[in-house]
Length: 353
Image 1 (cartoon, one colour):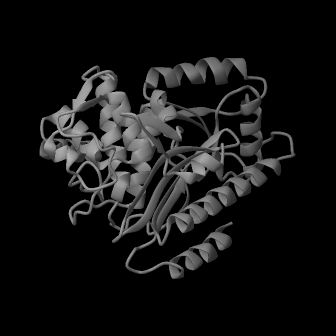
Image 2 (image 1 turned 180 degrees about the vertical axis):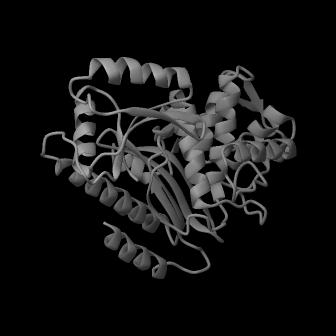
Image 3 (image 1 turned 180 degrees about the horizontal axis):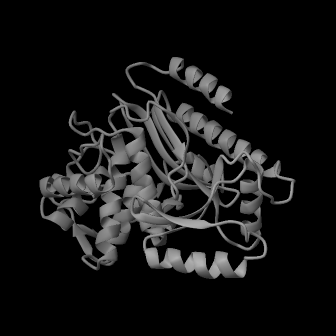
C-alpha cells in the first residue's frame, strides 16, 4: 500500500496548477488515524470550508442553549451586501437559525455567514476573534480566520490537516447535527437551492460536509463518507475544477476503503498469540474516563472474557477523548479480534504501532 500511495502522490502533484497548491488529508474522524496525506500542513486559503467553523460555533451555541433553531436572524446591510454566493435576504429582513444552517451548508451563503456572526457576537469582527479561539481549542495550528465565510482575504488561511481536525470535531462533538450535511436541497424565503456537493447527491455513502472555491486556491472539499460502517473524512485543496476535485477525492477515498476492506477479509486464522506484535485494537472512545473504565470492566473483562481472555485493555488519553486499547497483537490477531467485536455490535479500529 505504501508504494501505491507514493506513486499516487507524485501523479497528483504534477497534475495541478502550482498557483493552487494541492493538499489532501484522508483519515478516520473518530480516532484520528491518517490513511493518506500530501502537503497536509501547507498553508492555503480555505475558501468556503471556513464556514465549517461558523457552523461549529452555531452548533455549540445551540448545544449550550444560547440560541435556538427558531430564533430570528436579521440581515444587516453588511450581511446583505456580501459577495455571492448568497441566499439574498434583503437588509432588515430575517430568517431563522435553522434556515441559516441550511443556507450555509447547501447554498454556501456568504451573507448567511455574516448575519449569524452578527447575531452571535454582535459584530463580524468579534465573531472572527471567537472563531480563532475555537481554532486554538481544536489545535488548528496552521489556521487564522479573518471572516466567517471564506471570501478572499490574505489573512484567512488554513491547511488540509487543520480542516480535517475541524471536520472531525464537528462529527464527534455534534452527532445530532450530522443529518444537516446530508441534505441536498432546501427552500429559503421561497427560493429552492440545491447542494454544490454533487458527490453527496450521487453516492449514498457520502454524507456531506462542505465544498469551497476561490480563484487563488482552487476548488476545495471536506467530504465525509461511511465505508463498511466506518467513517472516513477526506479533505482536498487545490482542484482546477469542481469535477477534477470530486474525481480525485472520490478515487482516493474509495481506493483506501477497498484496501482496508481487503485487509480485513484476509483474516482467516483463529485468534491466537503471536511473536510479531505490531498492532493494537482500539475498542472505544469516550469523553469521560469513567465510561471508559465501565466499558473495560463490563464489556471486555466480563461479557467477552472467554473469547479474549488473554488480552489486557488500557485507557489512554488522545486529545479530548479517553480511548480503550488492547495490548500488542499480530496483524491477523488484531483484525480477527476486530471482527469478533463487530459481530457483537461493538466498534473497533486496528492501529499499527
